[in-house]
Amino acid sequence: MEEEEAHLMPATPFFPLAGLHKYIAILLVVLSCVLVHRWSLRKQKGPRSWPVIGATVEQLRNYHRMHDWLVGYLSRHNTVTVDMPFTSYTYIADPVNVEHVLKTNFTNYPKGDVYRSYMDVLLGDGIFNADGELWRKQRKTASFEFASKNLRDFSAIVFREYSLKLSGILSQASKAGKVVDMQELYMRMTLDSICKVGFGVEIGTLSPDLPENSFAQAFDAANIIVTLRFIDPLWRVKRFFHFGSEALLAQSIKLVDEFTYSVIRRRKAEIVEARASGKQEKMKHNILSRFIELGEAGDDGSGGGGFGDDKSLRDVVLNFVIAGRDTTATTLSWFTHMAMSHPDVAEKLRRELCAFESERAREEGVVLVPCCGPDDDKAFAARVAQFAGLLTYDSLGKLVYLHACVTETLRLYPAVPQDPKGILEDDVLPDGTKVRAGGMVTYVPYSMGRMEYNWGPDAASFRPERWINEEGAFRNASPFKFTAFQAGPRICLGKDSAYLQMKMALAILFRFYSFQLLEGHPVQYRMMTILSMAHGLKVRVSRAV
Figure 1 (cartoon, rainbow, N blue to C red):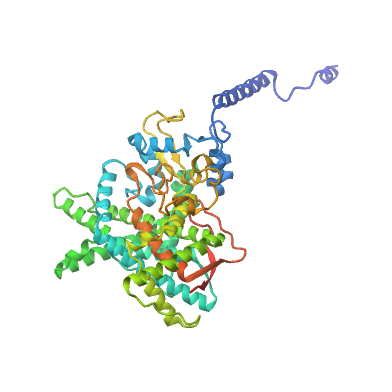
Figure 2 (figure 1 turned 135 degrees about the vertical axis):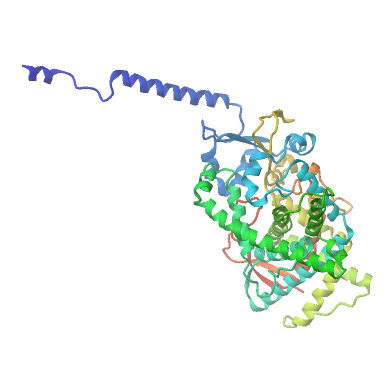
């Protein structure tokens, strides 16, 4: 009988009834939170955001094409907010908003603690990572050097020298039918140049045999990894346990530091030797020497710039390496790609360069060496050297179309594609967007150059003529619209120097060579602070006298 009653009793449910109510209540609470969160973001312009994780999933999915992902959003909305765990990023492309952040309310938008925490391992307290008094001291010192006519004249000599070295390498590659990676060669040229001009040392990476360049490889790896930190919520965990990308970062920084400290030691030794021989006045014509002197002044109690220790000098060196090497080489690479993909532009540029050569030769009374044939290496090298000798700081100003081509390249392929700023206090941007203290605002030069509301219906087209007015003179644009060199108090001090080096190199190369992209070679950017090419720029090169 008991067995029969037990058989007739209903089976026990999987969840007790009270427990089922509890799960339903939790589910309703979660759904309510999601709905409330979605309702609070109903007016937000940007990718879909979820509680806690924000838009992390969509950002990670589009990380390899982040700049173009932002173009899509910013072409529909001038301002886009992207929520991330524990913070939010506001991206802007409207020049009015950019001017507010970079100039009008400059003090409210420093680099900030968040940005510095990501970049500190690489840039330390250098000028690109510093705020406040430390930034002002470095900027004052650097601006003094960049304003020096001695440095400008010395830079022109060095840029010409290394452009000719690059020409020699390309001449031999042309003769041998070799494929070359122009991005790698540009990186070597600009690294050698910044070390000579900025630090007073020869490192020889552009030697004909192209020696191993472990510093450059380590520096690029470190740059890629610190950029990934901006969207990787686990990077601090990786750093703590020393695994994954953070382990590779530590190895890369070790190699970077070994190179950097060796440059500092060499420069200090040369200064000591020069003082002992009574030639110390020659030691002042570069940036590193100036900072070393400031450190010495501070050490002896005279109130110098606080750069007495090698760690501070290390930060100075690396910040100027990224400014003098990466940004210039990247722009040269994209310029070369644009010229190859727009043969009409390349031909128009070559006509300008040939006309310039003839005019300058007449002015200087130079009889140009005839280039007799493709195998006449000596005559070809002599003609290239003659042309290079006609290129000076002042004469390069006559090459209006070249300047327009470089500027158009920077409009579409800015060396720094995004530039984030911290937010000290809550603020309202001119377009009405509210930003909160502790978040970040990023102006996006890559997107700004492609916005029709900034540049008109042909914004996405490479058209250097947009920079030339009816009289044939160069037409400037507002620095808050054309932001390749920043704007406001942080505007790039090395702008003129960068143009000088780029125009010096490009005038020589595009006067005497033509380039053809290697068949099937992919050209796309990689995600790092600089818009470099992920696979380099493999080309075939031929002489074009």
